[in-house]
View (cartoon, rainbow, N blue to C red):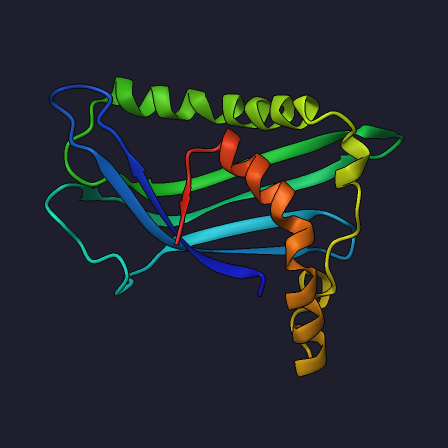
Length: 166
């Protein structure tokens, strides 16, 4: 319930660098102090076998941590961590460009949320499954009925981050 398989494709940034793809499992949790963490790692998946169209990158680990800043309720500290083998030959300037784009991703999300108007619509508690995990069939059923509440957030994330869910 708080875990999903993701497929991402990236066009080549230069004629001599091949396009890349990622296939990974992503999970999200809320820690007792309120910090939200999302972390991922690569895996093989029958729904996305390797092909010659893309070089498959290996995400050893990657993730985000989001924590509200005490006494500043409208601010969030964002940490990003990644260890990845992009596969094949990738010039250092391409890697530097990818690295420098990460803060822009956070800003794109922020701008997308602002365009939606009232940010309070997203000020909802996390679903119980994210807090405690699926503990019973009844809890899982309750979660399935609430999924549509999160469609708006997923749509915003999709607009700001170049991701294709699987």
